[in-house]
Length: 398
Image (cartoon, rainbow, N blue to C red; front, side, top):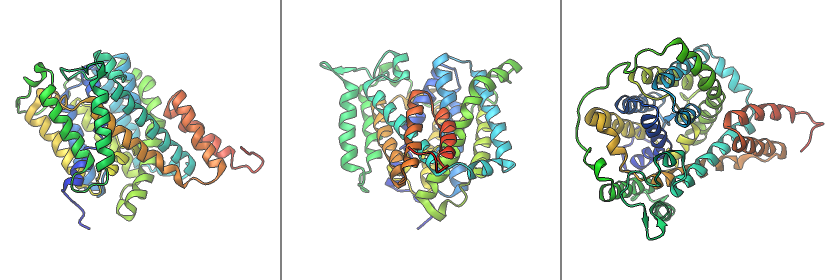
């Protein structure tokens, strides 16, 4: 099989993770004042380079703990940038020293599956919120479909209509190689955006060719760095290790076998460190890999790094050709369409627990899910490791 493919399935698969990436990116642009041009350029470069290096489909996502807290509390762009810089430093240290390899070696398989099931469940729940118009982003915009001029058909919200039709189409075409489901969803959603989009947004669909400024917000202060370390970075670290490194590497090996030999704990850390350093200088958001993103790309057809080149090129061109107007292009895709992508990606990731056979192992997985839903994935990850090792003792039973 050729290393790179550029066909309909790779195109559809390349779009599979937009449901996670776009809402958080838009939220950090609108609420935290991040630079859209620099953000999209950093995402695009990270997609292209990581795909070319690792030789398989590689996901690119926002760091969710940082993004969610920053959006919810309206942090400044400098504080967000400080968190990206500190995460780059941390990931580089544990990657270059090989510490992450030692850490990964002692994380039990049930904990990895717990991270994957928990992440998948969160993705599915978020997908449902997008369709119902109940996500944080939609609530902040005070609209179920913020960028559509029509919000309902009679008494039925338009997001539910679009989501229902999109779900049926996905079921019908999920394994269709001629008309891939992901491609149909994004193409159909874009057409809806063009016909029903808010007029003010459609007027901004024009070229503004240029490159983003370096360090658009300047250097973060010591106060910004201290705040970012305590409030953003420390809570993000367990989730990054659990989901973006260990679970992502495990899933890559499951999907691609020997082709993913370059996808190691060490290489993933260094890859994310370099990406966050780049994003810091371009004024973008903290970036990572992630098992949920990989499941999304794979479920909708991505099988080679060609998908990375496709979606990365889209983001790079979006940044360079549209500049400050790049947001207007992303507004064309309805939130309910992104919700369908999340639903199917989450289910794909959750199904990885099918190889869990032992009762104790399943207990760890389900306990991690419960803790994650009650608090967060980082807490579930830490407690999962402790419980998994406790249950290795024969005297303890569940």
